Image 1 (cartoon, rainbow, N blue to C red):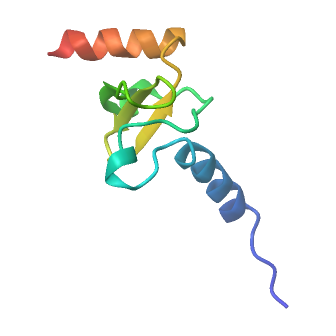
Image 2 (cartoon, one colour; image 1 turned 45 degrees about the horizontal axis):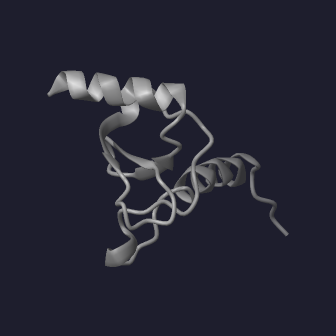
Length: 91
């Protein structure tokens, strides 16, 4: 029986931990956060942001990365507020 290297499962676990904080897939839920990522996203990955809709059960910020991943984060986090300011300055 072959054993798999340890690196792919660890990498998969990291990607899933970030991806599970993203949004659910249905159209009505695309702008709501149901779980937050607790990891700071590297600034050079971030392309855009949006706030969750008022109708969502909890407030959040959705960052879109350069590869199209959408990640929900807590709007009160200092780094989140700084990223929003930097993105607004780009406009």
